[in-house]
Image (cartoon, rainbow over the protein chains, first blue to last red):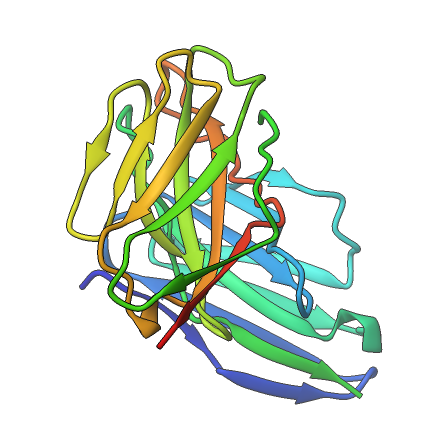
Length: 114
Length: 114
């Protein structure tokens, strides 16, 4: 298995809702990442997990809450989002070795906040 | 991460070679050059990376100048499916094996024309 799987592919939520995005990989990668991408912009890093522990938080608002329950899963819990949070949310993974491997990205979850 | 400069857009005829330039004049000795691409509405896809030497894989070739201040990604026979935004990124990989974050710039929109 050489893929990163993200679910759901599309999500519409209200500003008072609580929802979660899910990311899964079975490549044995020990680093996982969340990126946010607005239309016509490059992806922006949100969070980095190394060995299931949060290692980088790029000053992301607390309404976004990441969770890494095990080495294969990464969740992003969403609460009280704003319409400007509508974007494509991308998950990625990579090995943590001395070799400079590239990241493997999922196809993303397209989130619309209404 | 060192910054990179890429042209915002390029055109290429189908079947011809596409040569995408990237300037990274402030690159450090331990930083690799990575190339990713993103086809519309999909997640980024890793293409190739290099440190000093030229590299080739089944997708592309990477030519790095001797002073490492610039590089060129070559798609030898471009097809319509190669139309995408191409990102050139420089990133360090420390001796401990930890991956530094991958930061995307604006990239080059390559349009392959019939």
